[in-house]
Amino acid sequence: MNGSHIRFIAKDKSTSLFFATLRERVDQYFRKNNLSKHANTQMVVKTMVLLSAYIFPFIILVTIHPSFSIGLLLWAVMGFALAGIGMSIMHDANHGAYSSNSNVNYWLGHSLNLCGGSVFNWKMQHNILHHTYTNVFSKDHDISDKLIMRFSPHTKVKWYHRFQFLYAFLFYGILTIYWTFLKDFIQFKQYIREGVNRNTRSQNQKAFLKIILSKLLYFFLFLILPLMILKMPAGAYLAGFLLMQFISGVVLTVVFQLAHTVEKTTHPTPDENHTIENNWAIHQMNTTVNFSRKSKMISWYVGGLNFQVEHHLFPSICHVHYPQIAGIVKTTAEEFNIPYLENKTFFSAFRSHVRLLKEYGKMPPEKMAVS
Image (tube, rainbow, N blue to C red; front, side):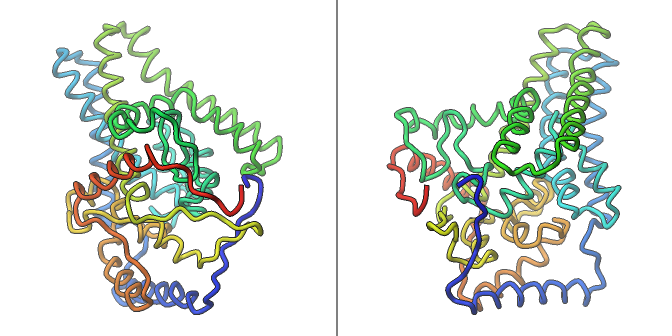
């Protein structure tokens, strides 16, 4: 199924009216209020705050050399800032949502390099596969099983999966470390093999060189410069570096999982004709869940990823606008009798995620229409 193209075709043709109606209403909101769909002053301020919270603690670490405890505190601040940059700045920019200026999106999108990641691979995994085939087994790599984790009801259950609700959050903490050292290289070959990457050989050679150069720059700034040139104490420095990676990994993974790996979401599979019998927009409504819509603090920090329903329907709109258009989306969904999935609080979403991990740790794989 990896190499095949999946189509979304609804039996009930009237369902196509849902997204057409919704899109017109959202467009009307922006026209009526004379608003841009891109970043506003609030977003620019947030960008400055998050980048500063990541860059300045690092400068302090390598110039002032604070005590071990203060150093750990600074690394922790960097960890939360790094996750915030990924969820707010990088995410919007690589969707083209941050600015109408492609150059602004390009450079801010490369803030992903701050955690050692590759924009080239991320866009394929997230923009193409995840947003097109949300929660579709073997297509959406964001919810595919990872080593000792089972995130799909369609995969084989192993004996250790029954404990995954306990060890999951330790596993989540290695996300950015794995991303920095291995993921991009593995993914690059995988996407060529599976036909996701359709670039020419020359284009891929340039892309791969760019990945290598970005990794070398990252390793120089975060490992070679502090440890080999500035001669910082290796033990204390590496402990802080790993703490930063662990915090950012847990935050990024948990926030993402609360939108897709929770109860109520569906994991549809295509039939023998590689067709999912549903309208694409309604498919997004069935596979995506919001959480904590009323919390301004959470909405600010997670970059609107608690409004995943709105994001999946309108990924090119900057997330600062999601709280305002969420009411339009929910009302329109109710008019068309389409579910609007949400958990009212972060903790209710978190508990739902843990319950689903428990369930997936025991349940046998569901039968698929096509393998």
